[in-house]
Amino acid sequence: MAAFNDGYWWSNDNLRLHFRDYAGPDDRAPVLCIPGLTRNARDFEGVAQRLAGRRRVICVDLRGRSESAYAKDPMTYVPLTYVQDIQRLFEELGLAKAVLFGTSLGGIVTMLLAATGTQKFTGVLLNDVGPEIDPRGLDRIRGYVGKTSSWPTWVHAARALGESSADVYPEYGLEDWLRMAKQLYKVNAQGRIVPDYDARIAEPFRMPGGEAGVDLWPAFKALQRIPTLVIRGENSDILSADIATRMVARLDNGRLVTVPGVGHAPTLDEPEAAAEIDQFLDTLG
Image 1 (tube, rainbow, N blue to C red):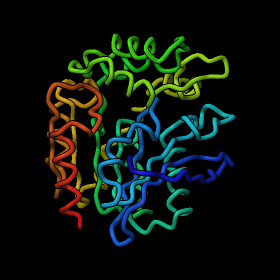
Image 2: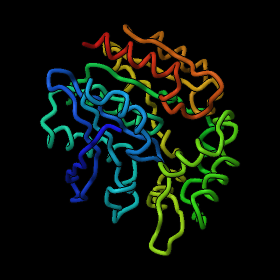
Image 3: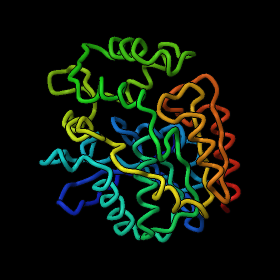
Image 4: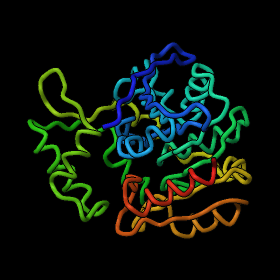
């Protein structure tokens, strides 16, 4: 297991935010990983373990997730605020450039960051997300995000996760679900297993438009000249095959990879994804 350091930075509205920092060479652009709506830095454990030593890997907890502080105002749980938080992280760490890995919501944040033009990206990976979101997936996410659930043991949590997500990872067994449960959940003060995020992140998401309330194609255009790898789950209900194809057609240096047999979102540990990531990073130097 590659070691990591816990790092912290402060947001514009004075929230203490957390990241995991896996060491790597200083002469290569670090990989900065931004997770999905209900996920956290642990979501990228597999990627970070594989790349650590070859690249510095920084995995963030967005505000309201895991070890990052919860916001007083739930209406700051929106992409534009996350963009400001990541910009502050660039400043705090003195990053001149980075390779951005964005899963789902993290990919939306990545596109918006690129559109600001304030940070230099040597490459971008968009994991199962694009400038148009499939309404089916949005409806599914609205159905569970923010709901209060708890379980008495990790096995109970894993079995519940397996029941709700069997169509996303149909080949998973109990050990896989246990591993994912420990990425998604935590033990609360009462000894129960609960989701590791502020349930109030659902409040802006459930408003009309939610996370997809703006046209993201203009933001996506900022990636036109940036080497970009688009990874899509074959059974994704967030990124359609048509939108993914249109995305790559608009990029000067883009590649689409479909991970077979999984939905939203690939873990990036699948052999197909891992091989493409390695090749992609090699091309960036």
